[in-house]
Image 1 (cartoon, helix red, strand yellow):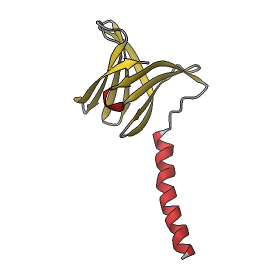
Image 2 (image 1 turned 90 degrees about the horizontal axis):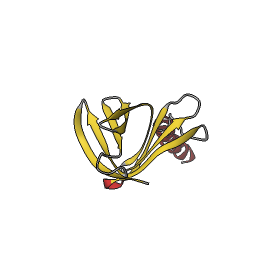
Image 3 (image 1 turned 120 degrees about the horizontal axis):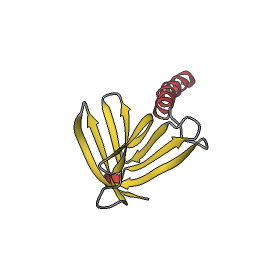
Image 4 (image 1 turned 90 degrees about the vertical axis):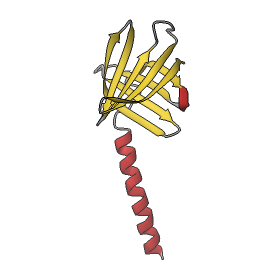
Amino acid sequence: MKTLLKRSALLLALPISVLVNFSLRASADSTAGIILSTKCQGGNNINIWQNYNSGELLYRATSPNGNLSLGKGTSQATEGVRVYKFRNRNYEYSVWDGTLDSPQSGTLEVYKNNRILMRQTCRKN
């Protein structure tokens, strides 16, 4: 019975540790400063961080569907507002920092294979 319990615990712990390791590989800590924080429709909370030393952009999202952590983002000015883009395999996440009409709002867009899957309006914190 003890052997079965130990094996079950090991089989449960291994996938959890692998998931945590890969989902949080680009960590934001005291070496990065937050440059954008938004709350979006559907419960998505998006934070964009920038590493002080390297300048790397980091994406952190929490939602009812889980958390997502990405690095190696890009930033560009488009139509008078700043857009942050991050890739995760076939997915691209675009966070618009404001709109021309309302600087305190923004948009989260998610694309898969260059086709839009989701668009949510957001408010800056």
